[in-house]
Image (tube, rainbow, N blue to C red; front, side, top):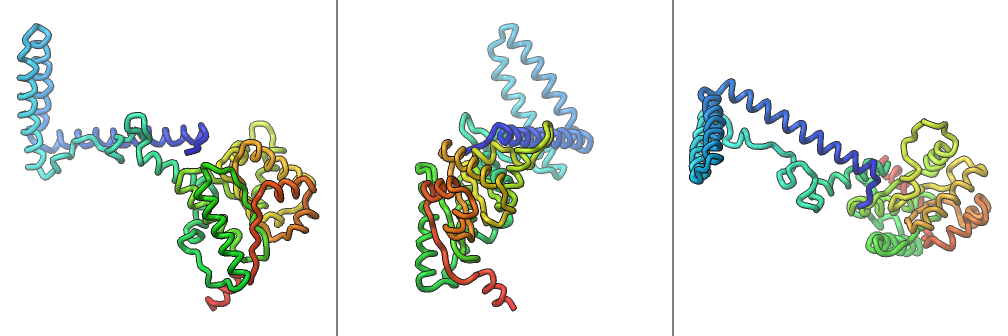
Length: 320
């Protein structure tokens, strides 16, 4: 699961905060019980003093002290539990509290990441992917062929299969996708489907509309020393999957073409996958951007053309 050092440190700090929270909860419970349960404090004091006394015997050479201590403490702890229950508390009220009992809020079981840590990674990646709300509706579970027919349906099914194969082979096969064609035919939808599947597997995905993407690139290029950006440049260039949605909707200038080429080149050299969706035709892509951008996309991306009616408009009409 790909995490930057900053992301990993963030998760560890959250685990430390959880441990602190639960430790304070235990301390509050102990104070509460000592104050409210008659005889409980005396039992605790007895356990402490007997432990010290038996420890001294063990140090002086009395080998039977350890077994004796075990039996005495077992009886006193039994009495302590009975007092708790009699006073209306659960028997385990003073047992250690953990959000995750399996790893005891450490994030690890031995040297392996606990299931809670893996889920925390996925949750973090979802949050930082910029598409949390979008993926609630745009995913393979909600995929429908209702609005396609003829050649349009054939193209969509082909693009869907390409998207599913992309997910299936993602960790073993470096691949890029370029969804293009008419407005509202499922290009962004398929990109989101892929994003959700990969995020669920723990891959890092960063999603931008084209406008947001070039704004971020500009911030990193022109920002003053010491200023901060929402997303680090390293996240853009090294995330497992970068999605640039609606390429061609941004305000065009020379910086846009050069920064796009630079980003695609960096990701290609690092074998990091990129998905681009656009309403531009291939001819418009060539005319709008430099020849080298056009060449890089057409030679290093699998091209998926989608056609048909604007599904968003159809759905809007049907709701009326």
